[in-house]
Length: 68
Image (cartoon, rainbow, N blue to C red):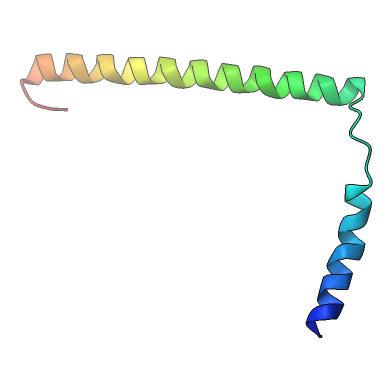
């Protein structure tokens, strides 16, 4: 397949996406809010897990006098 044909096929496939309306409906807005809330929860869980890990390492080092 020639390069020109490949470019034309890609443009034909990409055109419908480019023509899409960017007005977000209520469902799209709700989805974005849910994504943001999920990311915040994940970040808080990661922070809590890091704190627990640090505390466990501290207790281990105190108990064994070694790096854990």
